[in-house]
Length: 238
Image (cartoon, rainbow, N blue to C red):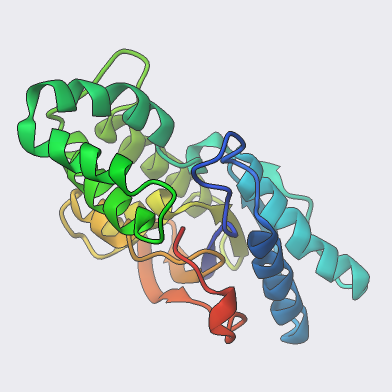
């Protein structure tokens, strides 16, 4: 049997022009994870990242801890199958189109805009975003150039299959995002595909979700662990 550890990237700079970069907190989360893994003499046969900057940079910071300690760290390879869903496209194209035709959603957008720059921003944004994503997951909204939920889910499923199809007895770390982690948990539990997003909302920055796998089986061992972030000031969802 092999082990697969899915690691969500550190906090990224949401609501900014450089939303794909790690914040200072995100960098601290990644460094804490690296130090935690080194202290426990963790060993990996393979390291994979998506192609997003926040995923790659998280892996780099973790790898630096191994290098400082003189411990082996495999060179990370990139696989775009582990990228997050196209939240920019969903927000930029699908949200305005839905607001034009749905009064209830239009009010959620207005409430979000009214609380921009306040302490309540995240709460109102999440309420609006969950409503939007539910329609996206159900296939009720779409636009040219925006990845559908079905295509996103198929992409992650294929990336997972590429890991499972390798040699046995491996320990694989994948630096990815909440959406792909949600999809892998949903697949491991044989839950409805729509459960992907329900899991996604709970995935914390820098957290560990662990599986045991063979070529034809993926079993969930633990979800959303963050033993390296015992200080509440280091914990975040977005």
